Length: 335
Image 1 (cartoon, rainbow, N blue to C red):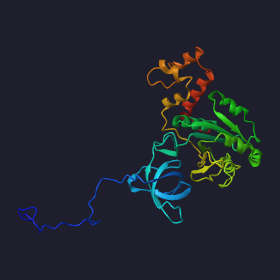
Image 2: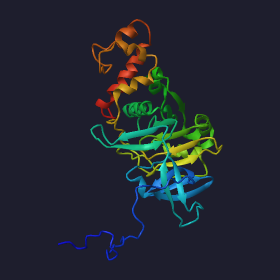
Image 3: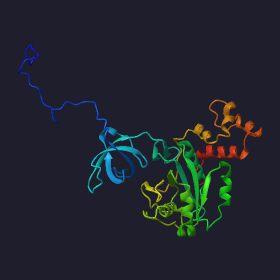
C-alpha cells in the first residue's frame, strides 16, 4: 500500500528532522588552514602538552585523526584555545609528516611495534660501566634500531669512576660510533654535562637506556631547571627502578637543541626491523653485496661480503660488527 500519492512532490510529505540537528552530514572536513604549529613535549593519559610559539598548550586529538597516534617529537597543527591558561584544552587536527621514527617492540616475537619518539636526529644510548653491569646486546639492539630509523647513534658511558670503559669501547671501535665517557664526580661539577651537551647542539636527541644507568641523572645535569625524579639500583637484582614513566622533551639551556628523556627499558625488541636495511649503515660494505645471492642474510656461506673483505676492500672488523648486529635478534639482551 502506497503511503503517499502519485506525486512525489506533494506538500503533505513529512520530512523527519535529523536528530543531531538539521544540517545534513558531509564527508568534507575543514582544512584548518589557520591552525598553529605545535611541537609535542609529552603525552599523559590522552592529554598532550605542546609547545605553541613560547606557550605550553594542553591538547587532545581531534576525532578526525582516528587511530593515528601522536607521540613526543611530533610536529602538529593545533586549533582552539591556544592561550595556555589553566583548564583550557586545544585540539590537534593534523600530524605533519615525520622525518624519522624510532620504534621498538616489547619482544622479538611481538608483532605490535611502539613508536618511541618522532623527528629525532640522534639516539643517545646510555649505559653504565658498573652498577649495573653493561649489557652489550641491548646496546647492539639500540644501534640496529638507530640505523634502521636513520638516527645517528651516540654512546654515553656513565659511572667511569667504578670501571674502565676501554674494553667496551674496543668492541664498538669498528662501528665508528661517537662516544662520551662520564663519571659521577664530573656530573656533579658540570664538566661531563658540558661534554655531552656539545654533542647535542642543533639536534633533537632521544635518550634510551635500561633502568639504573643514570640516564635521568644525566638529563637533569643537561637541563638543570627541569629536575626529574631519579632512583637507585637494587643491590640484589642489579636492576634499576623505573622513575621516568613517560617521554618528555626538554630544551637545552642554549636554546639550540632538544633532549627527549624516555622511560627505562628492560628489553628492546626488533621484530619490526627488516635486516636488509641494516647494511645501509655500513657504506663501506654495501658495494660488496652486489654479488650476494637473492635475499642474502649477509651471514651465510654464499655471502659475497667474505670475498669482498678478503680482497682488502674493507676492514674485517666491520664485517664482524655487521654480522653481530644482524644476529642480535636471535639472542637475548642479557647474553
